[in-house]
Image 1: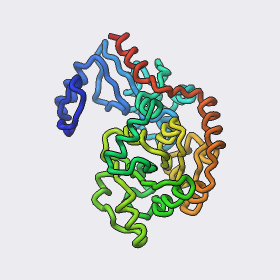
Image 2: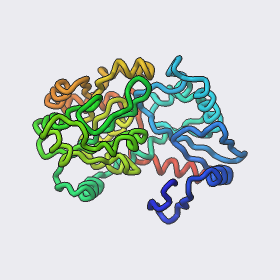
Image 3: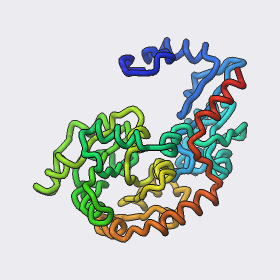
Image 4: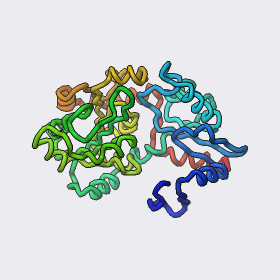
Length: 336
């Protein structure tokens, strides 16, 4: 950890993130469990077990060979080196299994356990909902939408402040539509990508479109970008919105409304590569600009949405039943 003062259960040993500590801990651990790639200098000893959880099962973005010409030679070398060390990849669906040869350059053992991070989303969320509202001093019946836009790189523009500007919807209009369609008082939890947080949080309330937008930002938008585990907050939310984050599929296991706001759909595919799904064919209502987003929310058909979700999970043979962590623990105990 960079911040060793952060709290963990007492059985977890916390060490400072230094080159020496990383080398020592990786060299002496029996198990590696990770959701990102190991670098080229990492080497696994005989007898060590590497479990790759990855952070996107059902997802939008092409990775590795699926990126085509935009997948660089060095990226291939790092990915192939990491995949060659993996003993088990966790999966939540047949769809994900089928993407591994090209999407991860991996053809080894796969464990259809479900996603441990999603257990909190599937199991009883009553306590989490109350805890989230108490933590942010919201009324007990407050409604929450989490908005988690993805990182932009290259020509897509990376300067994204908390305001109505490039790539962000009109927050006042968004909250107004949610209240008109679903009732109650709505708040927006903004979850920026880690690579955006450090750059943009200090900009805070710069920009905007007048007094109403300023009032909305001050009273109804809460920054949750620095919270360590996004899912401990997402489990307390009533709706979710993103552009291309795989968290859309994770949020959907809660059977809450999930909206897509992708104002740069064409430009994003040109930069990143063709997405793995046609966004227009998914259950999640898609909007490319504010007026369309408002219409999608006001016209949200819950029954139709849930039917499409059920069909999606059946077709992809998705397993998210709240027991994934236990299954992975059983594998670890069996390997010991």
